[in-house]
Length: 266
Image: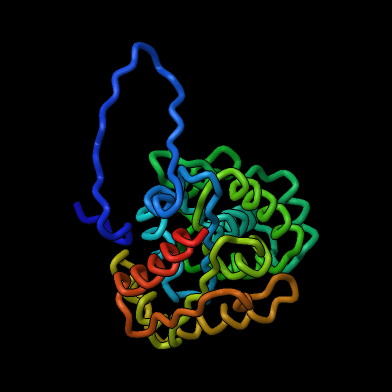
């Protein structure tokens, strides 16, 4: 059978084993075979994907996680959850002290159900409530507050120590996971990113002009790049990939090629 990104000339065999009682089975993948199941290999595999808004980070990260059968941790969703909490509580995001005080009584967790990430805020599943334009803009402001970043990064690093995963954001390779196994920096022209976001919003029933989306993305880029704490920038050891004019399949296959090359060498 063909498995995208897998080893060449590899024959897969499915074996069923019947045991009298449940036992813990340890799957061992050695040498080049590690590329088949990085989630079961001895070494935790951490992949950092950074880049500006609309570059395709989240879409690609999800594809990579599914292809490698490892977790996908959506870090931007965590920032959005904090922003959502502040908006609902009518907290002025520009007033750092009130944000910090509110954060102290905020319980934020990331759980996985059937391989899908769920963001739980104060015992409420807010996964589907944090994808609005208002929350997006607020999240960019929340992300510059050191106390917010420190709390979220602690959660993210703990998950990364225990699981092979893919994380996407704006400072994953430079700050959150500086020792990640592999780092990628995705970018695209402003025009292309605006068109992608416009198409995405239109499919969800939200009408907005490309020009207004372009201005919003440019503003967010400026905020992310100029923030004093962990700004958006390409890590020195990150692989740069310009996604302008490329399909999702082309970008994902390019990244999988780099990952599989890494797994064969380690």
